[in-house]
Image (tube, rainbow, N blue to C red; front, side, top):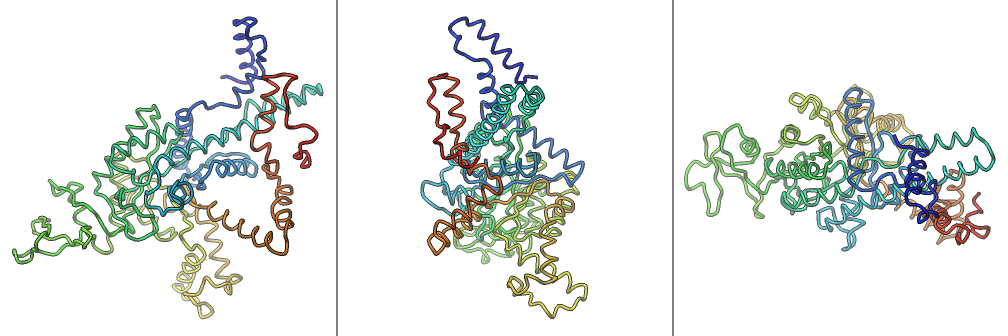
Length: 532
């Protein structure tokens, strides 16, 4: 296995072979640059991170406490800072991923400006963001390793053999910031060929896991809004196949497909599939349609569609927009069928979009799925679209009421009120929120927990606080006390924003390339020196 010293030796041999023409090349500098750029292509990243996810899935199957987590990103810097924070606070990036949210691309990265989550943004922005995220993560690696090389140089200069070996060990055992990204391809942005072409671009950018939903592509809605329209199973499976072919074509043989079902909240379909057998998927899909019995020709109006179902002629209920309605209260059954069908036909993980975070609701569906697919696993959206405080306070209220506890002190419809913040009910609800991910991993088959839009909300909150003080009475103190002083006290690396942007790495390269002639930015007059 290659390490820092062996790379130096290999490059030294190369320089010797090239003779005097390579005389200015320092093998140790070249080895450093090689170590700082471990991943050369997005395909390499996808292959590496797919292996990580596969191992994590196996770990979870053996022990459900080994679930994984991620936070959504809309910019490379945001993803970089998350990984830096994870390594800083937890020592390792193990089982921590990034999530690329289609919602955030639509809202924050479209050239049209802010858009709703309806697949109206440029689809090329999806692979572009994947590439951007990995560019920033690779830069984080290069920057941190650059610091390790300076530690090595300092140890050599001091003649400290122990510190030198410590630095070498840190270099050879360095843990990369490159982690899996679960990337949202929405409903595929078109037909199966369009899905395949976009999936290829996403994989080439580094995606090892692609999430696709069973909505109609040109009628796609946010998973937590109304008006969702699903497609028949064969249409969805064609897109799953398209993604698998894209992975195989590019050599990412263990790429991960996350099949998302929106059927729980979707009451409409655009298409009645052709059924040729009473047991086929089309028949099962059509069985959920709301229909009226056709007893004579008088029951059929001009333009009506009539199908034969279980030996009877029925007329599917069609809305003025041409869409067909599903029967009420069939969402759970449709979700279960969607999930089983997807796993039986190429998907690796499931995503069930729900209207609330409720362990038992999710668990009941997973139990039904696991009767057919025992190792079924979910990716779950811990969505900011849920009112977590109200949902869990109401769950506790209902549980206590069912147990016969006196609830006279609480108004179930007003539990969001600050008046309840210090109550026993609030404390119990917060405890359940805190344990939700572990509970759901254990009881509901959730392998991966993510928050789709965390930094959308944190950016808004922090900006609001800064603007309130800076443009008010606090003036500059609002920034100094509320931002910079906290950065310094809490060891936030980007307080040295020039270093974070690569200035010190640039100085190193100038020295490599120009020697004593290098014009560096990190001299005595660099104000970053004020931060120690």
